[in-house]
Image (cartoon, rainbow, N blue to C red; front, top):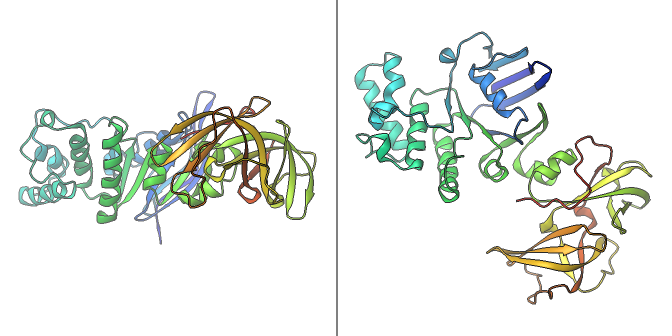
Amino acid sequence: MSNAIELRGLSVRYKTLAALNGIDLEIREGEFFSLLGPSGCGKTTTLNIIGGFIEPDEGDVLIDGKVVNRIPPYRRPVNTVFQSYALFPHMTVAQNVGFGLRMAGVPAADSEQRTREALALVSLADFGSRRPDQLSGGQQQRVALARALVNRPSVLLLDEPLGALDLKLRKQMQSELTRIQREVGITFLYVTHDQDEAMTMSDRIAVMNRGTVAQVGTPQEIYERPSSLFVADFIGASNVFSGRVVGSIGQWAIVRLDIGHDVRVPASTAPENESQAWVVVRPDHMQLADAAPASSDLNAIAGAVKNVSFLGTHLQYAIATPRGVEITVIDSLSRPDRKSAKPAMDGAVYVTWPASASLCFNGGEAEAPAPRSLARS
């Protein structure tokens, strides 16, 4: 499969700030690809460079195999959908969608036909005569999408286009976007800071941090096999513990956590003996038990139940440890082996998890978080 977009050594600096620092990235034809990261990581700058709105200080942008650095935005085979829909209020929906075709000199008959097809694609076939102010937010977003697709670009750039929608409508539009992308087969490059959004829609994701690409992979790859502590902490919910490697037993390295427990992690992922380490465990890999497990392949930390939240499909527990670190445990209500009785509030419990489910990273990582439990949705 050939690449729709290639970025080679892309760098951008604003005075002394490096917004992008030597990015190399390949995005395949027909792929739904997301740039994901916290505010200020460089994802929107990357999108704007591809769109031609910002010129890089160093590096090349290739679209369909051709360097486009000096080609203006209106001559690049891309269109952009922004968070602000920027619809013309004095035009009908059909006129908004067909505006780019008219500017390109497409004959009226062809323009009308393509406009009808674009509106049908976004499920707005009967809305062509309406004005933008007669539409809901979700419908306006669909109009903006149809307007971007009607010119049949090679690549569609989407800069947090669902950010202004409420949660329910945003979920609906996520499904619509993936459906439309599969139908048209165009490469979608999607920018978001919303992990769930990127994980739900993307074929692959580039997780960005401080102007660099921290990891590229499928949603499953970056969730199950994060390449760094930053990625492990940023993607999904995590419990993060600080400690030191104190030895090894067979396939396991032993990490003595700062909260006073020894846990086992895969030796292949652990730093050298006596090194500082970070142990990351997903809350859904943990369970609660009344007693410490007998199996050496299970880790356990003693604590007390401080809070229980019912979240529909699962229960979320907050477990306090004797040294003040809180652990988040997610108990799926559909888990076959789950206990039917909930532990009592303030009751003593053991948090257990398979040693193989522990992620371990070098404690010297510059982006390491504070030594506490970090549970995020």
